[in-house]
Image: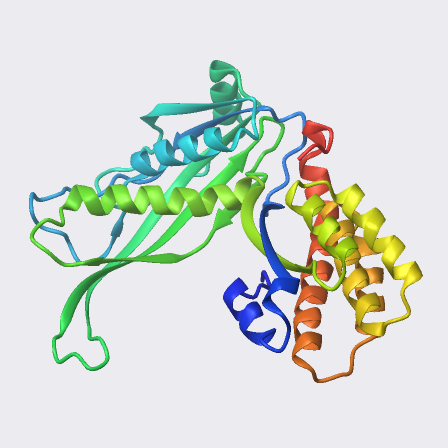
Length: 331
């Protein structure tokens, strides 16, 4: 679980401090995927091995349990993986591989011979196969507080299954399964095609984050008030020059006697080392900053949240490093 605290809440909790001394920054943080591909896997193909979806009636959305559109999901997933630029090439196979009849679901795991044939024909290192798109569609009613009107919504609970195949394995190397839900306001403009396309687009994004590393916006705070030197360091932060900012904060920390100023400088140094990729040093500097605070204060609560964020980052670094080895760890 990713720990975060919104910037507006940070500023609210810091109401006892001068607004000019606290700034927030936002940056993109890379998270590892659940699946780790060897760096030798550089070309992949996305195939549709899901049972066919039921017939669509114009203007009518069927309720209940049913099969989703594997073709749409395979196409959307291939697009999402291509956009991530993690693999050298992502190929989409237009032909459905599923050999079942009608809507009867007969599990069909691709055999080693089938995988070898497909990977050789498409000149890829691995197959990402959409095995199933299970849907539960229902109509819900809800209301807003202080409003006497009842609204109708369509809910779709989606459970996609994607298998990863490599030619050397008798069975899938791994499977990705998860469940998520989408909602639509029921209106005359809502069409069956809209629902199926929205499902494919939404689910492909979630699947992509389980298959390849992905970026998430993160927020942090730092102090830049109290002295001209702190404000100068703040200028370097806004120029993304963390080396120069850290040099000023280290000089301040070693020179001043004020506990508050040492707390500010050491907290900022924790952020600087995090941004430079040295999470262990960031944790050590944060501990120094906490040592200048009284327990049970609002500021200590903020630092405890940051401590959790750093510990989480430390835990994911080894997996992320493995997954980004193909890029010589440049990210």
